[in-house]
Length: 90
Length: 289
Image 1 (tube, each protein chain N blue to C red):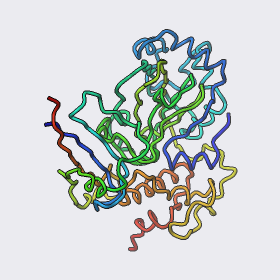
Image 2 (cartoon, rainbow over the protein chains, first blue to last red; image 1 turned 90 degrees about the vertical axis):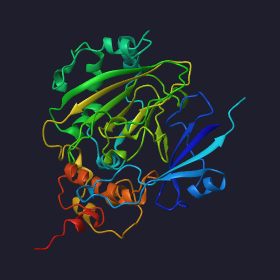
Image 3 (cartoon, rainbow over the protein chains, first blue to last red; image 1 turned 30 degrees about the horizontal axis):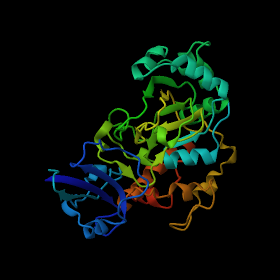
Image 4 (cartoon, helix red, strand yellow; image 1 turned 30 degrees about the vertical axis):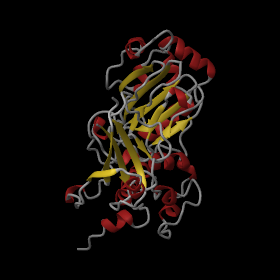
């Protein structure tokens, strides 16, 4: 078995909000991951990915910002890590 | 020198970078390639050809008159942009050559240069020079517009592979990028059969960064005048309209905070301490006794 990961960054904490960033790691290939080559997200929303068979394994926690950082924007606030499991080649 | 105007300053504050397409003339690109890049297969070779410039050297003293780089930094448009953003008397932080070989499989990770920078609004700039035509296949620098307001340390953000609205640099030989030091960027993979070179020069301010640009077309009272919330920019000189832009990669919560950070940066560059994009920052400063 091999794991494929799709990491989505969403516009807010709802899974049906718009995808604003995305990352892929594929345990079924030896090709290295590449940054910055894709123009369009693989799905419009996180929910669309779920409906296409991606299983959610982690959401970023919902938590208030620490007071001393309240005016400093963070990085991507709403990350969803999803997986598909594929058969390893025989 | 040719200083930046209000439209260019707004763009820098909104996006964190400026692109000066084909700024170096052809003969200067040829001289640059011959001096620093020709027959170099990798970074080490290219870097060995650069003159040694200790950090803290005034830019005006950094290069001998016969160095090609002296001609580059003397170009009126580039000298004017540096002056506009940093003020007079800037100093060299460091410079470096990046040479990426052909047929690469991997790219750089998204990153900022160096550690988290705790300065509030003051900033360095990085001048990136591309002495040859850069096509998309050659993997020019990837930049994330507007990310300069998000402080990060080095490759902490390496997990982000693609962000909506990202820009893949392409352009004719002689193109120059001027980046806020905190802009997220990466060298994309060079999938072409050509070597690609990029020279980077980081510069530090030595004094106030306020009011060194061409403010002749700037009306502070008009820039500060209240506008309806979420009204779109009316033109490239509409300061509030442009600086209230939400970049497409930003989640809504953080996008509002980006506007506050851009407001602080505009105050620094314009000297207008009462400027606020809508009531976003001025509201937070309202603490009646």
